[in-house]
Image 1 (cartoon, rainbow, N blue to C red):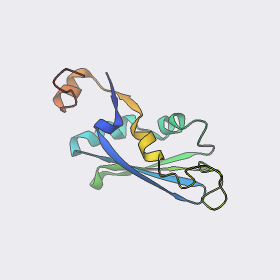
Image 2 (tube, rainbow, N blue to C red):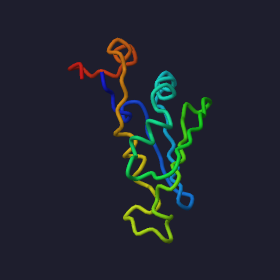
Image 3 (cartoon, rainbow, N blue to C red):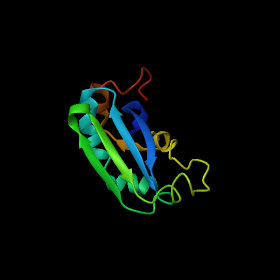
Image 4 (tube, rainbow, N blue to C red):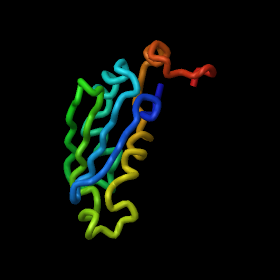
Length: 119
């Protein structure tokens, strides 16, 4: 089954020049392995195709149950020169949370990801 990341984690984002920085933090420690397995740099790069024109780097922070992503060349030159509405990349965290990952139904049930109606 497909599970949106917003059911597993929260996120924050910002910028350093033309590089967007997105932190993805698991709500529960038991969700972190799902993030590590499914939210790869390649998947994030594909999710932000058309926005991110450089490489995506992923850093694991297991003690925080978090992943950090750097999206290079993603902000139209950076805050002081970009003509984008979101030149600092503040909305990219919300955009990442809309990404969906595949989770076995039994695993989703065990982790409490299914609501009362089984969605």
